[in-house]
Image 1: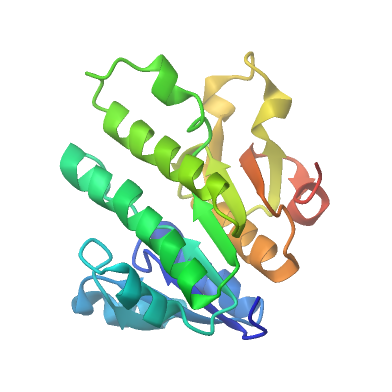
Image 2: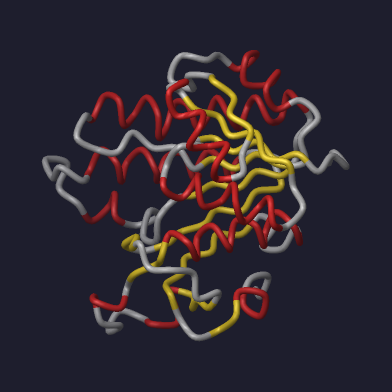
Length: 226
């Protein structure tokens, strides 16, 4: 793994990405935030990131590897936003897989994937005609590809995302079980950003999937536990 303090954040203008630029910066990292639209550069700078204009939907492995070269970690927090199954597959699966290959090519071992809680099973439960199915399929398959790599990965699976401020406290989704109330199966985007910074800084949860909700346990006490 590189000893650089630079992190490459894919999906730099997303709500989680903007928050993560701030939490990573506070943790001592320089953040290259990859964005598609140059008009978003000022938003990224205000959040604490260095905007890098690169369209991951069309960028090949070589172009991504050049952007990753020398980084300590890559964080994939991009998403097509749903609504267009073809673009969902192109961004949430195809671009994610190219990013994995690029990280390996660039020699960047640490790779943090922002997925969602239940991505490992929803694809087997949903009818393919369900509008959510293309997203579930793309995230499931991207996560599965990441697990096959030799990368030092962490897959983060937050639940329904909210705009609540960071509490710094979470719970593992499996702790709640099947009877855990639906209305409490939520995760603030700010807590996701805090978890991203924590796992990048500490290296904890290596080759693990962490599905989590907002909860009562400090992040540092929970993440890294088997």
